[in-house]
Amino acid sequence: MDRRSGRCYQGVMPVLAFDHVNVRTPNLEAMIAFYGRVLGMHPGRRPDFDFPGAWLYLGDQALVHLVGIDQDLRGGGTITLEHFALRATGLAEFRDLLEAEGVAHSVDTVPGFPVLQVNFRDPDGNHIHVDFDAAEG
Image (cartoon, rainbow, N blue to C red; front, side, top):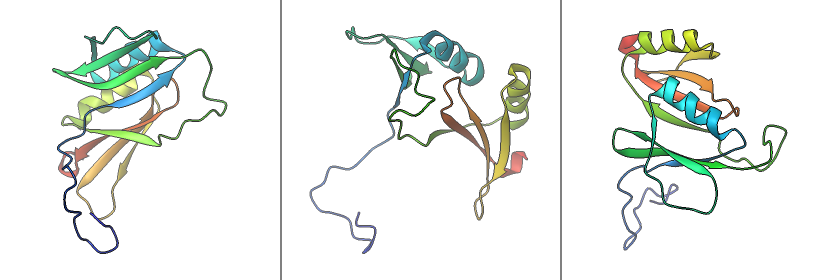
């Protein structure tokens, strides 16, 4: 779709769904553990690539692909991902989990939308937010 005119392009394949996010990390094992404890994701089947990594699943979908790297990216690097987001239910329980894990977070409203965002960072500093219906607040 052309954002300026609002017209759809003809002949362009339609995007059907979000598939996954790929995150580079020098802390592969810590990231696998964090995503498991905090977001309930589990490592699963992954192609036999010639580099370290893990595919983290939510149910039967690999939503987060981790790629192990040698360098520490927190001091700069070439990260361009600002954040990724998930939608969930159970705001109070999720906040309790973050508190128990010692994960700093904020709960923020989305102006003009009935959404509450729980914003936090993973062990590498990547911004994640989990969205909840504002009625849960």
